[in-house]
Amino acid sequence: MRINQRVTRLAALFGLATLTATAHAAQVEVTITNNAPTGGTWLTPLWVGFHDGSFDAFDAGSPASAGIEAIAEDGNAMPLGASFGGVGGLVGGAPIAPGTSASAQFTVGEDGSASFLSFAAMVLPSSDFFIGNDNPLAVALGGLLDGTLGRVSVDVVRVWDAGTEVNDFATSAANGLFGIPGGQNGPNQGADENGVITAALGSDYLAYLNLGGVDVSALDFSSYESLATITVTAQPVPLPASLPLIGGALAGLGFMRRRVG
View 1 (cartoon, rainbow, N blue to C red):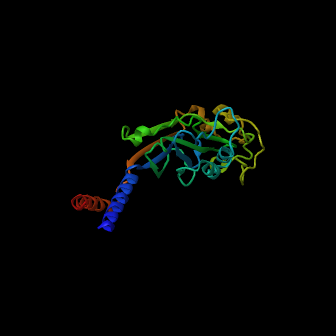
View 2: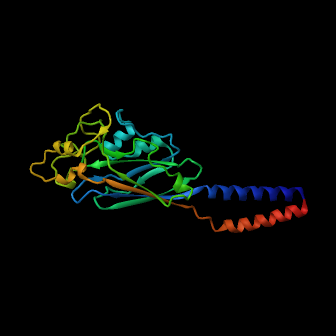
View 3: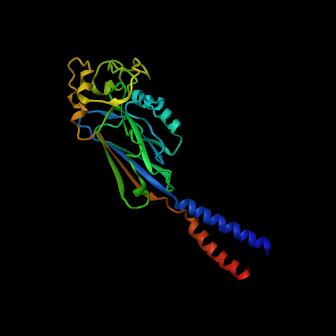
């Protein structure tokens, strides 16, 4: 009888732990839409990271980290993802053209570990321009995860200059998408700037281009209402088909335990 009681208790504990773990997870979908006009800037796949508010990807006026430098110069999110270490990844598998969207899903905890979102992507073409949130608390997801909000949407209205590479479009990324001559054919080809992160201006951006008559007026992002919209939605992770049966069995076991004990 003692063995049966122990088995019953272990089964109940296992079932409750499984139900509790499942109840505290949510399936989150992140969608980015490039709002640039036809002929305007493209974006590399968006890196996103879910955190408790303690992760700060960058600060305006300070030097860029190695992770931000890799995204801003080459669209490479691997160093930033490695330094982050939490739930996150890429939205999109290829550069995101004006007027198009990309989405990805992530499973996050509802225990406060995913209450905020950080994001970053390279702006194309550029030497080291990127979008991202320097305030780690700017995109709050608490209301989304507790069901108060149906979605969270953010309009991206600012481009950042990482200050890591001299703005020289002879060695910038993705020139070929815009008919711009030259451009980099490998990572980290521009001259080091050794500066700090600052807000980039669309009018200054055009001044860097030496285009030989190519019309790139649509690349003046200072005229955009927003560069991109990032939308986050969530729903509870569905229970595995076996869990209702486990729940029913546990109810029976609990009744049995009361009767025997």
